[in-house]
Length: 143
Image 1 (cartoon, rainbow, N blue to C red):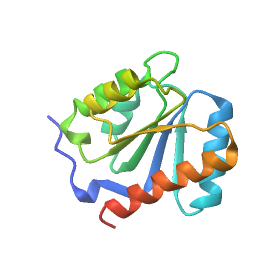
Image 2: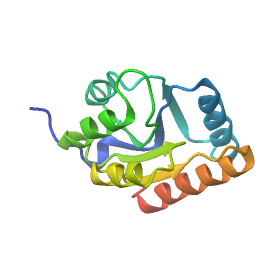
Image 3: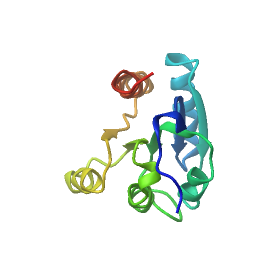
């Protein structure tokens, strides 16, 4: 059994983005580069293998931005897998998706999402929403 995460294993300056859309990946990367240039971002385009990859790391990202609608393991499965592992309990998971369905929102919170954010189409609003989410995450966590 692997040890549970502790504050020393969480890298508060690191974000893992699980997103399969190249357009959304580019928009997230551009927005974060503009609003949080010191933030280290890693992008993966599939949910498959995310949990195994996280468990193999010395340091965990402080924040995961998770899309729901992906090929292979979708966001719901990835969220459930992350929350099933006590070693990952301290990682913040923000669902960042185009789905506005109240049922989706409820299901994500029930599965352990820390936040659910709708992706606006307009880039300026997209950047503002993403900046607010990252700022909130950074202020709510220990340095």
